Image 1 (spheres, rainbow, N blue to C red):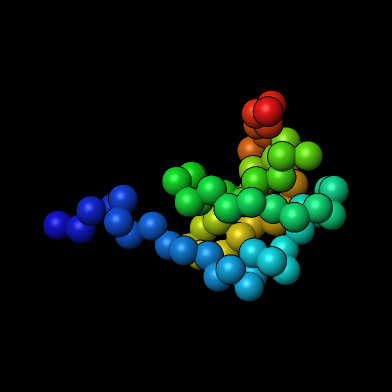
Image 2: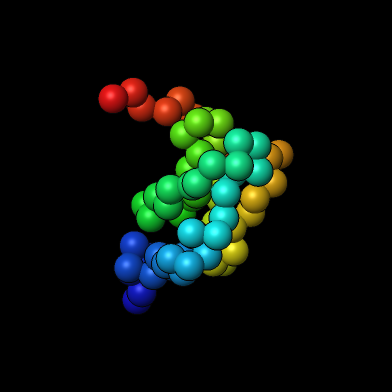
Length: 68
């Protein structure tokens, strides 16, 4: 049986450097655990599905950025 935790897809670092938040135009951070690209300034988490970042605001999850 395959352990789903070890089957987490990685995102190409060059792609991460090129992508920016569609709202703020600021860099994103990659959360490997949740498979999301985070925009702390906008408070949006963009999902990555089958290795493809979904950069649509209506598909993003809202979150409260951590202070400090």
